[in-house]
Length: 300
Ligand code: NAD
Image 1 (cartoon, rainbow, N blue to C red):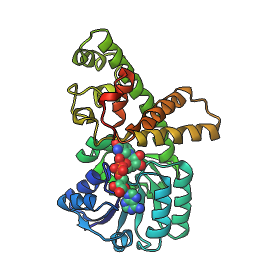
Image 2 (tube, rainbow, N blue to C red):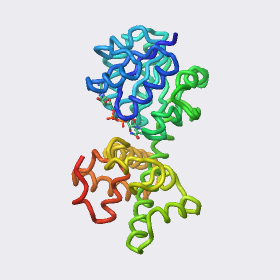
Image 3 (tube, rainbow, N blue to C red):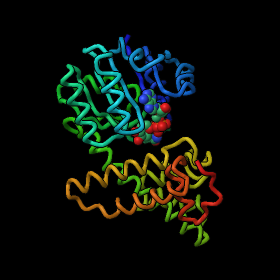
């Protein structure tokens, strides 16, 4: 039986680890949050008391952590050396390209195979096992990476060498941040024009305004498929995480000399939303900023 060590069992990692267990793999799980570990155990995983204990006998190590500094420290201080050299190391977090390349170099120097494999799809896809993975790794390692990710994946694409998965992810999420803000503006305007949200949803999802933020992740409660909007904007993709990704995109754009004015505007709007105390809310809650209704939104 394939032994998976799963580190980081939050909004995304919880569902992803559960799907590995559902696929019959032996999943040893660790998170700093005891509650998150308890949820993973209820979903068929085995609890570990530390990262080192979780990875000790792993065939595959999967990390799903908040940001670059967490990934650098967890690999540098707790995984490399503790996991068997034969283990395949997969970081699915969204982090900066430099951190991904630095961890890959360190892992390879220590004799491991490593891939950056960030995901697109959100918590519903994490729970359903239908995430899209974009992978940066040595081409020879890709088949093993694809097989390891299979229980969590709808599609797995080799983006290129180490760091290419993260490059794809920040470009994708810059586009997502921009499209969510555009979607929120359109629904807020429709409301002011007296157009019912469910009517606009039906029309926009079948017209040229169609995008994932409209059709799959509609920011208006009670409209379209179930989304965090139906749960007071709790438990989805936190606005603070979107802000992190937009900052990563702007930093990368500045370094590469790319012009990304819409990405810069999206970063400024999510920074404003975060500064008002709403960083813990799902990123679709930014519709309340467009509606001028922040007072009605519980801070989170
Ligand atoms: P989250 O905050 O819900 O989960 C992160 C988990 O990591 C937490 O449970 C935390 O306790 C744990 N953690 C932090 N440091 C740790 C350590 N040193 N050892 C063990 N556990 C540790 O975040 P999330 O929403 O699950 O996102 C995780 C990653 O996935 C982020 O990089 C995010 O950008 C990315 N992502 C999120 C979504 C989404 O919709 N939420 C979608 C795609 C990608």
